[in-house]
Image 1 (tube, rainbow, N blue to C red):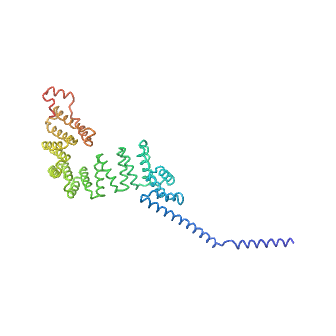
Image 2: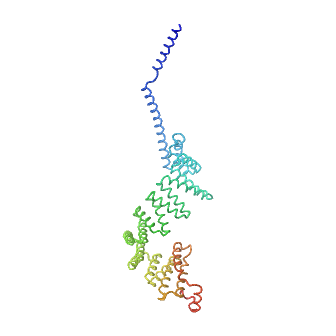
Image 3: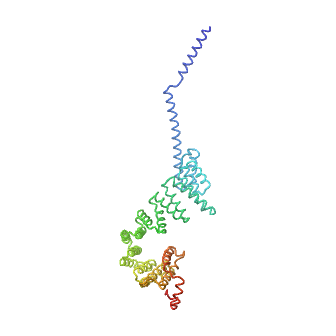
Length: 420
């Protein structure tokens, strides 16, 4: 009996194993199931990606048309439901809140976005814009907000060296703080990111001019002329810069081109006259000045440039005539003070005897010194700097107090008359 029981159990086990083996999927069935799973997953992904593309497209269309409230739900749906890894949705959502004047919401999106995508430069740039706007709305925290804006703009540029906008904003913020060297560096970064950034080149031209860096001015106007060859002003300033970097031949050629295209603009002839005068070609200079004077006979700067050139030519009568004409038009001209000083110095030099400078000659130079001092104040802007250079130069020729007393003791009849 026991034998039969064992045989029965063995038979049952064989049957069960056989049934199990018969019901297990084959390799082909397993492969088909895996293929079906992958297809279902891909279909789900495709459907999700399609929804993201549709939502992004709708949101961007509303954003482009300025319908920011209508755009927000589409960008929020992407971030909250469809795919929070879609960076662009964060960018557009934050921008919508910014444009709608909802700074708190914009700030939240920017900061959360940066936390999620720390190397997304445009998010840092957007946060910089936010901080800059806050600086305008909260004057008591202006410096704090602008410091934060500067940090974010710089980070944005570090992450993307082609981000011209962020470089421009860094430069503008430094310029607003009168940090000129830093402004120059950032405007250089901007034109490096975009060589056609005309605004940055114009700012560089101004800063280089202020610094007296004529090589920089020349580079800036050469680039501006390349960007906008139809802008006659750029060509004119390029000619001026070439002249100030001693590139005489190219300066003349550039101004010839300008004059040919703009024969009614006195400035072309005026700058040409200055270029010739700087190279001591006074005949050519006066011919150019004469053409300029025909067009603009009452232009004070032109008249004073002519007066200064006559000073260099030692034609003091003509210099005085043009100086007086300019002063009748503008009695408060700071340039006229400097030209008067130049005329005074030229006359004082001409009066120095062969044996050298004596006390009387020193008193004459002191007269010139006192003329330049009239231009040494903030109201004269750039002419103040010129006047200070002249004053520093004349320091070596001024009489001492003892020399002055002794001279007028011997020549009392000349006291108060030396400068006449």
